Image 1 (tube, rainbow, N blue to C red):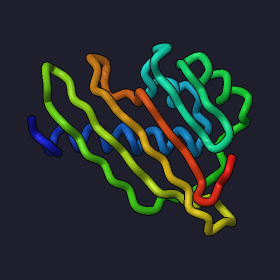
Image 2 (image 1 turned 120 degrees about the vertical axis):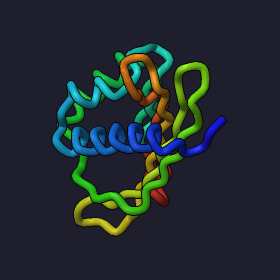
Image 3 (image 1 turned 90 degrees about the vertical axis):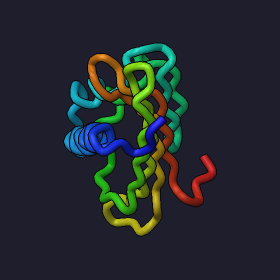
Image 4 (image 1 turned 45 degrees about the vertical axis):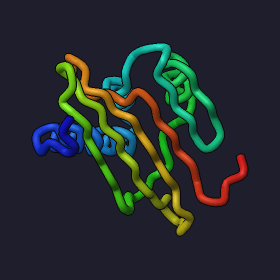
Length: 130
């Protein structure tokens, strides 16, 4: 297996950046297109635990947009290709507007026939207890 194949790394990095743009613009169709549409997809946030793409969609519709933020350090690692696909992790720190408190985001990405998709995501804030 190859780690950080340059072509795959460029692809998943582009997908990660597209997701960040969609998140900041509250572009729900674009965000949904970058998450795997399956009941096995999950997203754990600062105050929510979402099992399945339908739960993620409902949360996004009711949220009214993500707080604006800027990214700090981002680390993306891709593993593959394997059996026609690949797997990647994307870990980022972020800072919400008006706050120095660091947030953290981890995503697991899989390359499917229709492109890179998030299959699992976790968002937290340092010092958060809930």
